Image 1 (cartoon, rainbow, N blue to C red):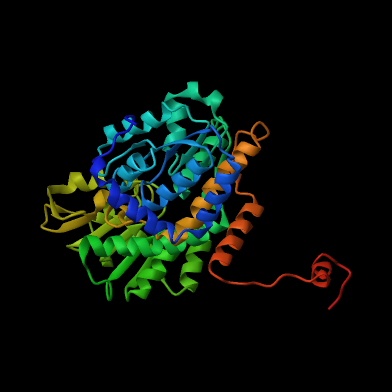
Image 2: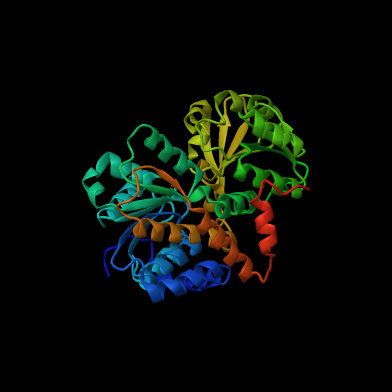
Length: 419
C-alpha cells in the first residue's frame, strides 16, 4: 500500500503495542468488532474519517474494517496525531492514514482533501471540517454520501447551523449528544486529560493556583471538578445564567472573564466559541499567566491579538510559548492554543472513548440501515443505541442492575393508580 502520508513507517511496532494496550480498556468496542466481523454491516462501504489519530481511534478503525468498511483516516487537529499509531494503521492494518503531528495548516487541508478523494459514502468527523469542506469545495461528492457522524460539541454546533440555514445536504448523527458520550467522554475524559496535558506541558503544581475555566458545559464541569480535586481555587466564567447558577450551586466562584483575568493563574477555554480570552483580558493578566484550550479549535483564544501586543515570542518548554509584552509581562500559551489534552498528552483515557466510539460505529450502522429514509438534518443518537451501549459497558464492568417487575411497569404507565 502506497497511498498514505505519515511521518515514519518504522514507528509501527510501537504503535501496534499501544493500540493493543488501549483495546484492553475498550470492551464495548471489542464486542462490536466481533459482531461486525460476523455480520459485515459495512461491506464495501467507503468511509472517510477526520478524527484525532490516537490509539483509541485506531481501535475504532479496526472495528469498522472488521465490518467490511473501506476506511481512510486523516487528523482533525494538527497537533493531536500520534505518529506511531498512524504508522501502525498503515503497516499493520493497511488502513490509509494522512496525518503527522505538527503539520501546518496547508498540509492539514491537503490531507483532508486526500481522504475526500476516497469518495466517501459515510463521513466521520470531529469538528465538522470534513463535512464543511465537502459542502464548500467537493459538492460533486454529495450525491454518493449516505450520511455522516459527528463526534464533538463544536462540530454539532456547526452542523446545526448548516441545517438551520438549509445548507446541510445529507443526514448527520450527533454522536456528541448521546448520553453515553457527553456525560462520560466530555465530563470525565476532558476533565482528566486536560489536567494531564497541563501538567505534562508545565510540571506545575495546581494546588493553590487560581484556575479559570471558561464555559461550564459538560467539558467545563469535568475540568472544574478535576482542578478542584488537585487543590486549585476554581473560577468559572459563563454566558448562560442557568448554567452559571449551577456552577455557583456546585461551589465555584463565577465572574466575568475580564474580572477573572485579573486574578487567574491558569486559564482554560472549553466553550466552542470565538475569542473567549480576548485582548482586554490579556491586558490585565498577571505576569506568567498560563492560557490554554481544550475546546476543539484554537480560535477560543485571540492569538492574533496577543501576537500584536507582543514584542517577542519564544518557546520556553515543549508546548509552552512565552509571549513577552512591552510592559515586561509574559503570557504563556500552551500547545499553540490547540487542544492541550491532545497536544501535550494522549487525549481521553480509552475507557471513556470506548463508549464514544461505540456510538460512532453504531451511528454509522444506523445510517446505512436507514439510507434513503433520512432527511437532510442533524439526528440524535437513537435512545435504544444509547441504552445498549450503557448496558454493554456495565456488563463489561461486572455491574448488575435491577429490572422492573410487570406490576411496576403497569404502575408507572397508569394514571388511575393512587398512592
